[in-house]
Length: 405
Ligand code: PMP
Image (tube, rainbow, N blue to C red; front, top):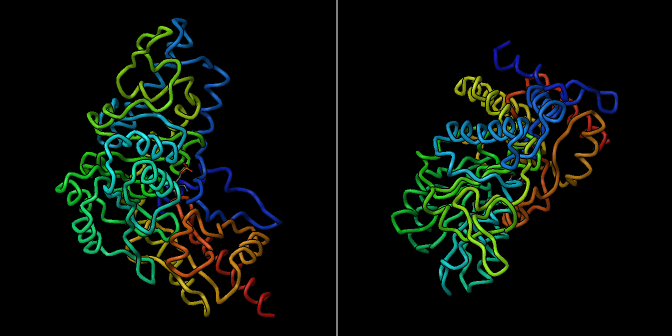
């Protein structure tokens, strides 16, 4: 067993039975499992250190504030940026909304916001609403029948539409496709567009260096990268970030308040009103430590070999149709089986202990483009192993036998 395969032992949730069968967790795209160190850290905070941050002079508050800000520093290092460029939010959805709202005054009637057909609703609806508020136009780069967007097409569409805003996922949550965002960003910058990359799915599998990517904004959800739920990150290049107007207002993000007027602090504090999700930040800090101790290229190789094994076995089943870019993928595959409803198949798989996601995966426009009402999605992480895939394939074959009598 490789060193990476050993890491599975750190994820106690995986060690249980569902419906009398060993759990086969293939839904990391929805949320990742958490290593024990993350759970321990949250436990430790509430049992030993619980206090609010940035408020007290007492020992507990000072201790927690320093840990909390330490996680921001740690994450900044991990992403290759400055801590002042990272805002804690409640999730990738919140992060995108903050930017879309903040860019309102920068858009004029008929300006173009360009996105791709692969986007999650979280990276569609805020832009659509922004377009409706401002009279801007939302334009979409289409996918082909397989759900693939080729790099040259994106570059051509950027050239054609000359967007003011270019918002694009780093990896598709439904199909797993990895997009060549660094090349897109360079092209979008040439025409002066603001670039926002949705890294919710990519972060865990690709570990991007954001300075190298050179996007203006990048968003993440901690829960998809071994961290707790209810915590997101917004990266923004400092000047652009600080230029956004305040989003929500309240305590801690202010300099002075009178009944007539308020002055606000600089980023990131100006976007962090109220008591933050302290335990989640500390838990995510443990997740970043954990990830930092894993050799990335070994992890990537392991995930890719698992994915290849999955594809080999899945594509060998008659009647299974696979979607997406199979060669350039974070380890997530969507498939259909003949005309079988995805919901029925997912329910049947659950009776074998197999957790997959079914439906439109918050990408209804993509489903329409592919002429589908939904798919089954299998999404892998480094804590999966070949036995998981064998069990899944065997369960799927059993389900098919049941369906076909
Ligand atoms: N973007 C992508 C690509 C996603 O997969 C998700 C979550 N499924 C989101 C955005 C939204 O993330 P959250 O629900 O954590 O805000």
